[in-house]
Length: 289
Length: 289
Image (cartoon, rainbow over all chains, first blue to last red):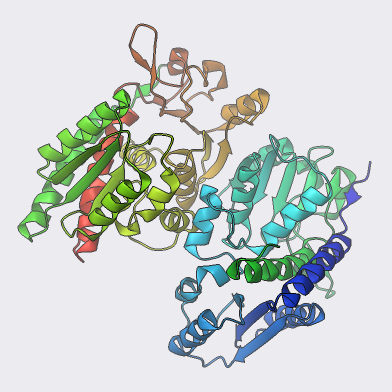
């Protein structure tokens, strides 16, 4: 048996088509979705991510603003810029590209973003709504939200299934746990303190394994239950320059569904960022989407 | 082997002694810890809980206010009362006793409480801080916070241990998962949609099982790993009027540590409510505790 590859590019393409229609509908009502991306410094990986976001926002004819600030930017200057976008009625989504230079306090910046414009879903009130499963309209981190879209698209069962989430970042693992729990999965959250034997035993039991660690071969074929779904959020650069995920290549022989790297979760994250920018624009203007 | 019984009454007594000292220290600085408990209607179990809270707050010489409102209270009246306590500098902790009569919107009431006075830790911003593990001073639901105190008191390892949490309420299961994850446990959250076989398999692997379901015998001896710690949050009334938890009596033969019902988690919840009222009073006045 070989796993079915989940084609993230194809799903993202369909999602983008829906987003384009929604964006057009909003624009015809006088609301052009506005996305502001703030980048401080010149991290090369960040530069690529920001360029991809800018390009996609441009394709969808958003009001797309990319603000590149020098590494020497002060906390006060960065907070002032966030405050400006908080006030700007033409900006509906604000994203501060991570990582920030060490002298800046990322947490303070995140909490300074108006929660209704917090397109990364990192503000405690948005994380709390998600975890508490209260409220209808609030932003959620784009990678886990995109993974839910993938699972739904592939009609993979979630309710009553056991999911192992490996990695507990605030941008991926934690919101993923909450989203899955809200759809009635039994979820285990594992991380660097989880013993290797424990991780293997839990993984062998899991119907779905999602891994976002940033370390190749964290999940190997012997850890996969036959037929399980494997979602690989890892993006690691190999010695030859090629990208690889956190899951060993051999897992494909055992899994039922698996996401490739590249071409799996990656395209979904950007497509979901666009989808959510449109949603935030609609919600802020009392419109349906 | 028979499990060691974790004596919640004794641990609560020690906690109350510390709280009394802290309260005295605050009072000597002009801050009398103020706890307002609001109860709507005449649910008999709620009446007992509220009376116990009032008695303990009185013993600790808090400024203790219990407001009993008739079942016919409107949402507007309840929100007005919350707003009054939000403004009152002599009240540092506000607790709205659950359940509210059906015609009232509990969620709106919870979110109307000033987050710094939200002694049940139910406001999304407090749940989000806990889940995101950001910030130092914020309230956390008293039952899970009290369970952490018990585990620490008994010097039970948490980091790297596998914990199974059964039940996912916002007052117990969810904050418990976050507290344990923040102390580096590997946590699985199970609930009514978890299959019976899956629950047994997960329980057999778990170093710590915490159950808050409200159904006797959900955890039986065959589900317990020898030496594991079992925390029983259940409070069920048997036909003979006696209290029993969610764990079968026979589990004591297999577990390493177990909490009795009554006399386990119950006393810790009220003691933690008192502890946290003092903490909130201190934090709101920029004092140490």
